[in-house]
Amino acid sequence: MTDKAVFQSPASESSLIRCAAVLGHPLPADLAALLRESDGIEGEYGDGLIWSAERIASENQNLRETTELATLYMPFDPLIFFADAGNGDLFAFLARIDRPDVFVWNHENDSRTWAALSLAKYVEWWLAGQIKL
Image (cartoon, rainbow, N blue to C red):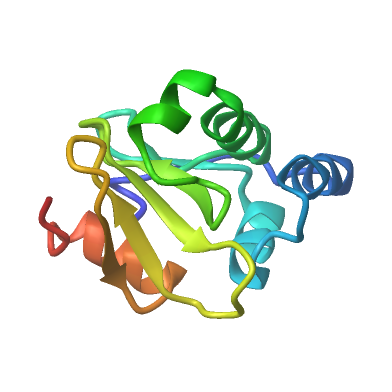
């Protein structure tokens, strides 16, 4: 996996606290634990396999607060976006439900589809090309 991914320095506790504050709820435990090890992971083409805590906060805030998006899509509040597919689609957890599953949001039709059993499986399957969009 390391030949296809670039790991960053760990996220600070203050950046994780700020991220949770922006989201209005805690990060999923697996995501927070990963960010404590690496504040983001880039895929082999520089794509956001896992965003940094700062990017998670800013992307989610932008999606939730942009008025134009609210007229085009279902609400984004139930999701915590944490990665992109490089084509406009985004990967997310459910925000207020303690469930480890990863979902993908399709930016063209606003569908929200199950993608992986957990964060670890998402990373494994995405790097192996097993998640097809």
